Image 1: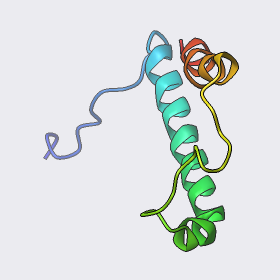
Image 2: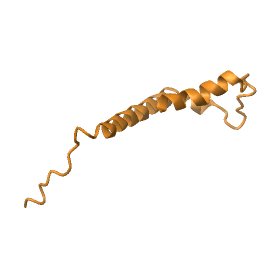
Image 3: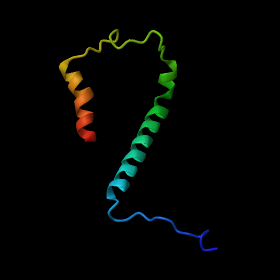
Image 4: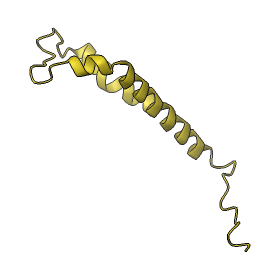
Length: 77
């Protein structure tokens, strides 16, 4: 009977990295889910076959390149 009620492994104080990654991952998933839910109407109305960022005036400048790729990498590291 004791085998059935085994308590298993516990999270130790030295597992701070595990707790940190779990919390960050959960919050990130929640943020993306809320972001998608709030923008679902616009995403459904968008014509994805004829969609182009270049037609909307978005260009790949040095500023856009740095803010798009380097800032999120720096924050996540």
